[in-house]
Length: 411
Image (cartoon, rainbow, N blue to C red; front, side, top):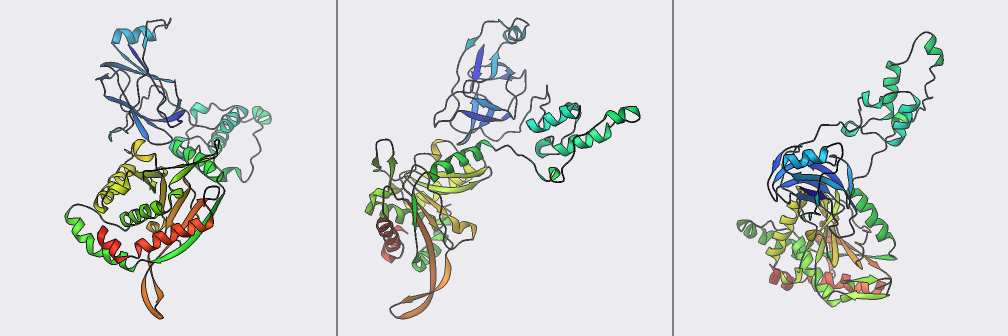
């Protein structure tokens, strides 16, 4: 019989949310069959069975599991019955089964309903005891059936005694604001985002803002888009922005680095993995276009489409979201903002925020014309680079994206 544990999968992950079981208690499973999906700080990962046999579920769906916790057992019916015996001393071969680095394919969730889990905060449970209410009999009206304070008070009203007992019944006084608040536990993703934001805020930062003439960029994308569609590639402005940014980073290498605080050293990266901040169903994440300097516009466009699709259906792997050297966030894709101050993706040195391309008056050669303007922001770690260097990086990005020959070469 094999014991299946939640193991250390790296990246500093210490716990996960058992999102759903893909099997039921007593099901027969095959070797490498996915048993459960666990949401971690980085991605949704799946837990495969190390052997074929019958499964005994131990951890509850919806619970938080920590590294080393037992999730399930897989073995013969006799072994599992022995494990469930009163002595609980049946021999067990304990094996720490590696957790796959990619999420399981979409399957219909199956929940072990042998025991109903009561969803309620410690404060609500305490109030139930004070009101002498059996919380297991209360129907929750909060998210996912969570029991909230109003549910207890409603149950208390229905169960309020009459006659002589009523004199001894003293419900907890109700504040007017109590029904207007609710405590919602943070998901693993939101916890990770909060942690990363706290780390990012330790960086002494400054910002440089500018705008560029994107008229030629707009024309190139408009011209190449139909051609790319015939090849099954969705072309946007971003692949061009990535290529121009990589070229600018080569001119300004200290931005393609990280800062080692302990050793007070700047770690220059000789590779270009460009992170893209992207909105996922469960929160903000960063997908990474690896070796962007070695890829064509079409290849980068394919990477962005594939990674975005995986992010949307939550099949993105940890490997596809790590080891970025510089990050770009596309505020313009959401339609708002002229300038912004995005958070640096720790431990990187800088981040580029690009905004919505819009029609504006452009003064050139003493003449005024209407053109396409792209505002952008560069936020940088002031321990590693200075404001003048940020201006140089911005000017390099402008020069590449305004250069028709550079853009034609890429297109």
